[in-house]
Picture 1: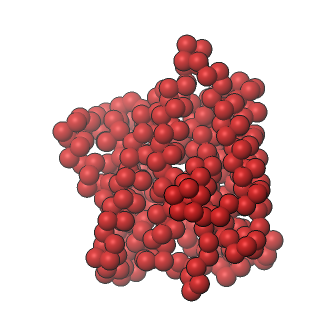
Picture 2: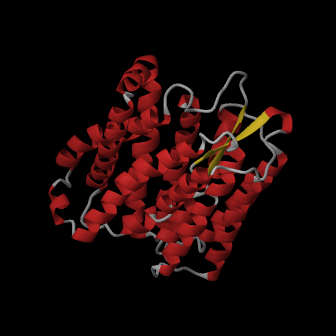
Length: 323
């Protein structure tokens, strides 16, 4: 492990701490929020925070340039691969546990690799294939028993898996856009456009009035999710990348702490499960560790961390880390 700057450790561990309780905290804003009132508040708080960041760094011109260059990719990135999966996650929240959500969320390791392999013809190393197999086996045990009459969480778990499959494209598009704009600009887009879309949906489909029913604790949790996770956490990870010693592989090793901390928080809050499911959780986390220790030097393949998942893509000459 290389020697990082003290501030790099600070940024990375702050991000891990902010990401970890997202599913647990979401549990406490249900009810009264509906999917679109939840997404509106989350995105609006994130947009407000990132507006200040962009203004202070004079980056709004970069945001406009990004839209001119590749507006279709930005909208897919922000709406289809970010807003839609989060709405599905919201639907799954009342009918499963935060523990299951934390574990299933890390199935994106397998889905991103499979999508990259078959849709984008990315190379897949042997250890990555083993990791995918272990990941699926662990996820199967997390969902056990696979019977709706015996497992009250199963429907919520299936919806969560669908969200993870769609959300896997977010990580691929994140890599695609990483060299087109400053990371803060990309963060702004994934908050701004969902805010614009969620606002009318919240009024027409329902949920605007439910915002007024939020308790003081509910306002705290949704503010934390919007500013702390959608805004600050991603910015902290991007700041960690500014350290010359920080490679994508090393960042992946750090982010494996997110599901571990999140699982511990959920269990501590009383959302436990059975021993078979705990075994599945262990396998899922183990699969991520295996993937993170895969050598990125093998055959010119790079392992790029994306919020706990790994995107495997061939390195293109002339690519530089995002700034």
